[in-house]
Each structure stands twice: as C-alpha cells, then as structure tokens.
Amino acid sequence: MNTDTAKIYAKGGRGGNGCISFRREKFVPRGGPNGGDGGRGGSVILEVAEGLSTLIDFRYNPHQVADGGQHGMGKLMHGADADDRIVKVPAGTIVRLPGMNEVIADLKAVGQRAVIARGGIGGKGNARFKSSTFQTPRVAEKGEPGEERTIALEVKLIADVGLVGYPNSGKSTLLARTSAAKPKIADYPFTTLTPNLGVVRVDLEHNFVLADIPGLIEGAHEGLGLGHDFLRHIERTKMLLHVIDAAAIDGRDPIADYEQINTELERYNSRLARIPQLIVLNKIDLPDTQVNLQRLKDYFGRRRVFPISAVTGTGVDRVVRATYQLLQRINERIRERQEITESQPTFHIPKPDERFELITKNNRFIVRGEEPRRAVLMTDMENDQALVLLHRKLQKIGVLNALIKAGITEGDTVQVDAFEFTYSPDEINTH
Image (cartoon, rainbow, N blue to C red; front, side, top):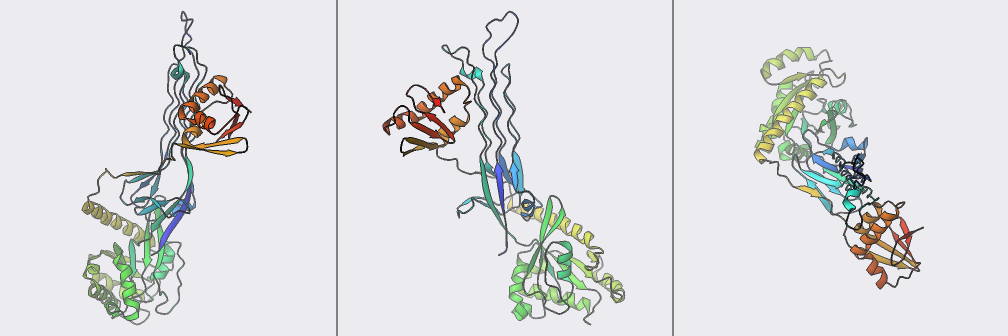
C-alpha cells in the first residue's frame, strides 16, 4: 500500500501577560489594583477536510504556529483569546510522535479534529492577588508558553480515480501531464507494470489521487497478463477515466477496445461495471483521429466524452475539472451513507504528568515536571513580589517539602526548567 508521509513542527501560541495596574481617578486617592488577565494562546489543531487526498502541502509549509493571546489591560480588561490555527488534513490521516509506533489520533471522518499543540493559558493580572494583607500587589503572571512538538503524519494513498484503457492508449502520458508523477513512458505495450500514483492539484486547497492502472487485456479477469493484480487496484477507486486511443495507431477498433475493457471489469467484479466513468478520447493531435472522432461521439451519445491530447495538453484541464466535480458528488453520497455527524470525537495528545520528579547531582537539585515548570515560566523573575509568589506555589505543589526530604541545605542550587535559584527555606534567591 502506498503511503504519503509528512513531518510538521507545531507550536501553540503563548498566553498573554497579566497586567499590573491601579485605579487612578479623581477623588479616589487609594484606588485598588485593576490589572486584567492575559488571553489564552491559540492551539494548533488538525481537522479533516473535504477535497484533500494527500499531505503534499506540508512539504512546502511544515511549520504551523498559532498566535499568542493578548495581554491584560487596566480597568479589569482581560486580553482576548487568540484564534486556534486549524490545519486541514485528508480523511484517513494517522498522527504519531516521531520515532514512536503508538498512534495518537486516527482521523477518519470529515470534521474530526486532533489538538497537537495547546496554547498557553493567560497570566493573572494584579487584581487577582489582592487580599486583606496584600492590598497593593505590584505583581502579575506572565503568559504560559504554548506547547511545541514535531508530529509525524501518514495517510494511505488510496486512489480516488483510476485510469483504465488498452495498452498504449496514453494513460501514463495523461498521468504525467496532470500530476508530478514520472511514469515510464514508451511506445510499446505493457510499459506500465505496476500502478503509478499521481496527485492532481485542482487548486490550492483541493486535490485528488489519480492511479495509472496498467493496460488490461482480454482474459484479465482470469489473471492473464497480471490481470488480478491490476484489477485489485481498480476496486479501491471511486471513479474511472476510461482512456481510448482515438487514433487507433495499433490498428485496433477503439469501440471494440472500450467494450472489451468493460467486459473484463464486469467479469472480475460486477461492482466495477457500476463505477462512474468519464470517457477520454486521446490523441486528437494526430491526423488519423479525425477519421474516428465523429463515429466515437455518435457511439457514446449523451455520455460524458472528452477529446484531449495528453501530449500537447489540449482539453486536459477540462477533464481535470469534470473529474473533480464528479468526485465531489460521489464523496457526498458516501458521506450520506455513512451518516457522519458533527459529534466526531476530538483527539488530544496527553498532557505531561502533573507530578514532578526530583534528581540530585552533587549539591544540585533538578526538578522536572509540568506543574513546577509552568509556575517558573509564568513568573517575572525581575519582580521581588513575583518571587515570593513563586516560593508559595512551589511550596503548595510539594516541591519544597521534597527538597527538604532529599537533604537540601541552604545555599544549594535548585534548577526548574532553565531557571536556577539558591535554596533558602523562606525565599527564592536568583542567581
């Protein structure tokens, strides 16, 4: 099974800083603190979207970064939360952390989401720290940094559209013309021995996967000419482009070729005969085509027929647009049968354990854990009042008791994330 893979770097937005502000109005000489909280940073969220079949866009845009929240303001005005960054992916996308086999999310249905990098929470303004014993707090929290990580994505490339036709009908040339695929092309039968996949971009946000199925011959349904291998690939497609050599350069009758291919499809699996087809009359750039073109148009009547030249590109854009429009109608019918609702689950990458661990190296005590890390990152280290609050937070979390049990003495170094301080039972002394 062919797969399309991508790695992306995702970073949630930082929370906005809390504000330090005091009410200052005429005739109100002792206005209290009125600094507002910062807004939450945006998260990076994967969402399954219609019209996508591959991860090709991430090759050009692998960095996905959400905006930060607004800072708090005076008069108890809170900063606005940032919008989440919604990243569109195709149905069937599997999400993993690089180097790990565990699947974090398996996004199957349109609208399904996975939060891959959470935005940071906003810092509290100084109005939050007012108390009966602390009436003029000149301290506010910084916004929490957003999560950042690299994510591995994978989607199975199951062809949306299959190219069928007799050998040398021009299927490989059409695939090369419409996509970045580079199939082997030569002027003899069975040039293509394995299905070639190409991604056809309709516009910036829409694409589909096109498969060049090797040429079928009479008896393919019985396994002749690798027939079973080729027909299995057609089974997975939603529609077919039936390519006909309208110039009949091999001396065969184009109508007989068309009928024979459909006979092989039906004999192998009756469902294949019911798959929607668009008829592509190729090689209209050759003089011999004009002899057969009107006869072919009369034969197909009202069926969708597209005269093209895969070599020169004449008519190819029209085929691509018509294929995509029909594919969208097919996908809509599939969704209706599946009865997909809007209540699809949202996946979240598990947060790190809130508990902490303490590592001792000589006279250095290293604290690792999400909760103490968050406390440190949201502290303004240049503010003495903020350091007092940090000391209280670490005490509440249990870090200080753990340090005492580990035998810490005054003057030893404590490290939390990238921040270091000298231990004192009563306060934090920064380096």
